[in-house]
Each structure stands twice: as C-alpha cells, then as structure tokens.
Length: 137
Length: 293
Image 1 (cartoon, each protein chain N blue to C red):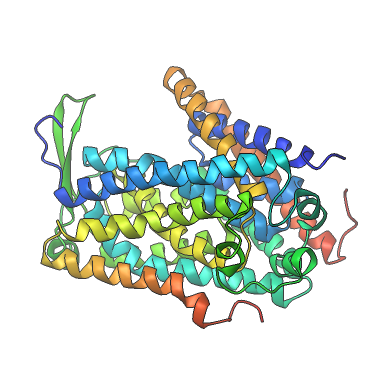
Image 2: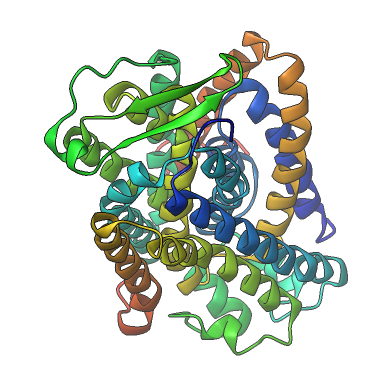
C-alpha cells in the first residue's frame, strides 16, 4: 500500500482467511449443487421438504430417527453429497480460528495473549457439544 | 408442488437481496432472516442457521481485502471478540433451546425477531455516520492495547492515521450485539458500525471493515452451535449463499454508479413490514390473532 506499512499480524490473518474461504466455498457449493440437482443424499430432498417446517430436533427424528448432539451426523456420512457440503461449511466455520492461530506468530506479546484467549474460547465452542447436551434435552 | 420450488425461490430471493444490499447500505443478513421467516415455510432454526452461514461467507469474502489495506484492524477486533464470542455462542444455545424446549418456541422466536427488527430499524434510521471522527483523548485500556492504525485513502491522496478509544464502554455493547447475532442468525454490521464509529471514534471505513472481521469470528463460533444441533441444511444454505454472492457482485457494480436514497428508504420500509409480519405470524401461531395464510 502507498506509504502504509500494514501490521504483519493483519496481513497474515488476511492471507490465511482468503485461502481457506476459497476452499470452504468450493467444498460447500459443488457437492451442495450436486445434492440439490440429483435429490439424493443422507437426507433425501423429498424428506427434507416434508419436514423443514419442524424444529431441528424434530426434523432429525422425523427424517432419520436420530437425536443430533455433535457432529457425527455428517462426519459418519461423508459418502453423501449433502454431508460433504457440510464439510465446506465446517471449513468456513474454522477459517477465523486458523487465521488467528496463524497471526499469533506475528503478534507482539500482548496480542499473543489476547489471541490465545480467543483461540481457546473458539476451541471450547467447537468441542463443547461433544461434552454437554445443554441445548434442549 | 415440486420439491425444487422453494430452493429456487430462495435463490431468486437472495439474489435480489444481494443486489439491493450494497445499493441500500442495509446488510443482506439482516434482511434475509426476518423476510424468510415471514414468507418461507422453513422452521426458524434452519433459517437462522442459514442466516449465520450467509453472513459468515459474506464477511469472510470481504474481510481479507480490507485487512490487507489496513482498514480492517485485528488490533481492534481481538479484544472485542474475547467478549462477544462468548455471548454469540450463548445466543445460539439459548435460541435453539427455546425452539426445542417449548412447543410454541418457534412463535416466541418469531415474535422476538420482529421486536429486534424494530430496534434495528430505529438504529439504522437514526444513527449518523462520521467520516473521520476526532479522538481527543484515549482511555488507558485503548492506550495499552495500542488501538491505532493507518491506511492510504485514494480520495484524499494521502495516508490517514487514526486511533480509537472507549474500549471499556464499547465492550458491553459488543457483548449484546454478539448475543443477538448468535440467537437470530443475523449479521451485526447494523450495530457494530455505529459502536466502532460513534463510540470508539474509528473512521467510517475502518468501522465497516473491522465490523466484517468481528462478524467472521462471532458468526463462525455461533455456527458450531447450529452445526452440532443439525440446524444447518445444505438445501437451504447453498441456494441462499449462491444467490446472495452473485447478487452482491451485481449490486456492488450498480452501487458504484448510483446509490439513490429512495432505495434505502424502500428497503427500510420492507424491513418494517417484515417486523410487523413476524410479530403477527408469531401471535397467530400462539392463537392470539387469526392466521393470515
């Protein structure tokens, strides 16, 4: 930039985010379109249409007879395009975390601590559902 | 009705939102959730999940560009998200808990969404934008965190340096905004920008860009709550993200040519209508008023 030295912490954050966003979008959209066009997936489109007016918990009981707590509902079914599309969403949802981890290396000591706190909070957000079932049941 | 009818409608609908958003200056996410809740047959759980992913992808697509220029500032974002990441996760948890724990939870959420929309409408209508706010004194916390930066402003042909203040006052506001974003699946630029610009004294371009950065972290954290509850359906998310992404590119080109003020007022009017419809739909679901359709 003309006459401006951008904080290296900022540029590392931006570059990491840019790359992961492209990957996430492609992984989400390509299998997602194939799923919508073919209508075949872990939840077939006819079932989805019939039940998408129900709450998330009722939806999964009605379509697959399961209760969803965690991530196994898509991680165990990656041969289906709808679940593959969810992997794209996972990449997008993990992008800020990876970008912050990358920028820690360029941060000064104060910001190393602050970013580390955010990273820990983020990781807790990801693993929390694996230990706690507090969202409704 | 064929199964593809609603996803196709959703694509067209989000395409239009994507075109209108940059022209009107109203965020796409804030239009998507209330309008889809009012007019589409999907449960609010899935609409909020899709709203979060839409706001997340929009912010992820633009934040790196602004960060490289020095406009989106990680120094300002990091202390803010230490607080708001917690409240956005809490918002997601409580929002999904209400719909699954109470049989009428869907209607409570719809009514609350309508009320929040009234607040957003009031904020958008009344808040001013200050291009280059003057920061006379910097509080001790902002000083210690070195909340400052610089960018090259092509319209002025020079480097603009800035510093921000009032971090202690701003943090509770960001906590509240994070909660609303997580609970309703809204992007939160409508609140982030005025706080950064008017309370903290960030220049408007820095405020809008840093707001994008904040949204990436808050919405990504809340998205994990929705993912873990199965509240994200590719059949709703994919057409929405595609529609808004394509629409936003068209809208950005149109916005360069003209941003008629009337479009903003029309969009704000539609928002107000959506707020009324959401509240009515919620009350109708609870049996207080007759159903419209």
